[in-house]
Length: 480
Image (cartoon, rainbow, N blue to C red; front, side, top):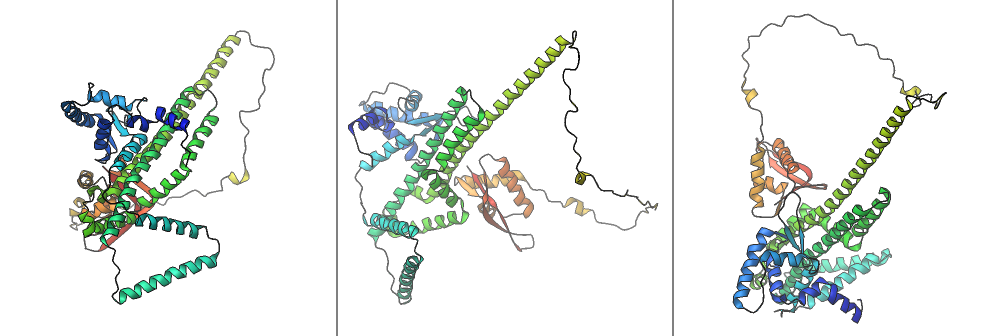
């Protein structure tokens, strides 16, 4: 832990957005609104049109109480909170829209969480934290142990404990967790789940800062492309290869596995059926917290994609400028040739045998191929008398993509994301594999859909004859 020196604290007080928020004149009003607009409603980003009416209601309520001075309009306050002097909101314009959007900055979220922890909690658990510390300690010790005999002995000890527990269960000895322990662990789980969303915002802010620095350096850069790309890609690799970036990548791969999502959903459903958990009035949003993680992770991935797009645009612009320079040199040569046409120099100026060496390798010579001689047979085609059915010509399969999109949108009304396997399970395939390919075409046309090539999922259906069919495909996730 870094020592809290006086100079360090003074610098934080003057420049850190979280400290400025806590020391603001209308801090209670600002913190209350930001918590209501983002954290309490679990909103990642909000548009200007959605925030202004809500802020106007808060302003009206505060002005009626008459305890604070709030003379500005709601839109003006949003701009003030997003300015560099405040740094509590990040204002941006998503691609393809002119409507301003706002996102809570990591510093402001940190201040809001800290204020929330000042409130007295009804239950303070220590056993679960102690067990977590011991579990992490054991994992680190076992993960760094190089003596195979020691690791085998530890595995045998754990196996004996499991065998003893299984024998006890067979004998009717069931050790149940009491209500206090359940509530304590549930509180720790809920706190950790919410903190994960804050971690996503921290990582996204790192890539936003890198993207802004890249734009500034590209604007003022006068050197070669290689040096600039080496510097930019080095910083990007430093973020992705850092402990935070490596942990995020492993977390994202774990979260994208369909079997993990299904397992997490089932366990949350079972947990909320436990009487001790129901009596504690848990936050209902925890039932779908893994989908919130997925949406937050997608925002971070799109930030990285925008950074790559910025680099590609820079390379395209540099290529255009280089081509333009080449054309200027060619025109200069042509102009010089026109000037020298009237008085050409005497003698040979330049001698060149050919524009390029002519290479003819032996193995590149084609082998002899005898000509094809077609045999023609003149036969008259006689009309047949058989009456063939023509219904088959009208029984071709036609997949309605509009209906497929409607199936996906109907499921997205109740959840932020859904996989292709879940769509097929809810809406059975009518045309088999052709309809499954149609869903892939719908995902390819949807900018919000994700096709994860590195992760596989199994899709099951029944054909027209009732036989079970299945296909293993890349993971397809439709997002709201």
